[in-house]
Amino acid sequence: MKNTPKHIIQIFNKSLSYSKELKSFEDRKDFSKWKSKIISKSGYVENNTAYLSKGKIKAPLNGNTILLIDYNRLEDYEKEENHILNGDIVSSVLSWSILKFKKKDRIEVFLNWNYWELGNPKREQFKLGDLKENQPLEIKINGKRDFSFASRRERVFLEKNFIITYLGKVEKIDFLSEDKLKKEKLIPVERKLVNLLKNIK
Image 1 (tube, helix red, strand yellow):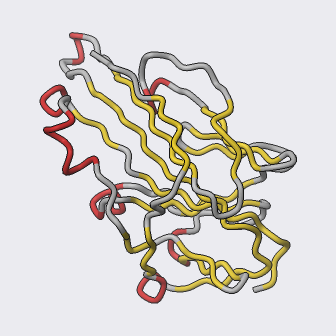
Image 2 (cartoon, rainbow, N blue to C red):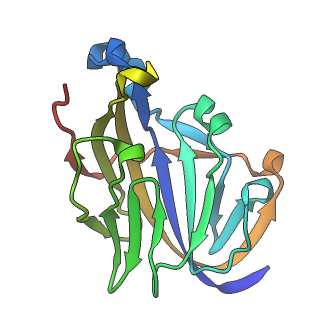
């Protein structure tokens, strides 16, 4: 299928939410480390073609940018619905989770804070960095959500950890069934880190 060229951005997601029992890093270290490789269910790029999972596309791919979202843990694949997102980063912005993408001379990534995704402390919305082709950017940030005593729900700690890579532009898109699409992807070892973690009590 021939298309207008599209920017492809790969996001690896290793985000966690946990209670105070796992507040110590030592208690959650097995959940917190990146695997060296994962099996993708979103799609991949090869020979200037994006191969996308037919079953993960929720809307027509009319925008100029596609986000491929892959999860570090298998159980997160099952509970998350967003694996492929499509939008415009040239005349508009494309938002996902706490990230916002916009293209000027380069593709820029901004923090897009909201309470339900990240909790407190409130963060200013600012530029996290530029995306350069095949130069991964890692973002670490955390927060907490407090519930009222009336709700009888305890405090939840949130930790977002993303590795973002701009894979360039593609001229062609092919759609594959999920069983044919499974692709092994290596988690980038060399990456620039933006560490916004705070000591949250």
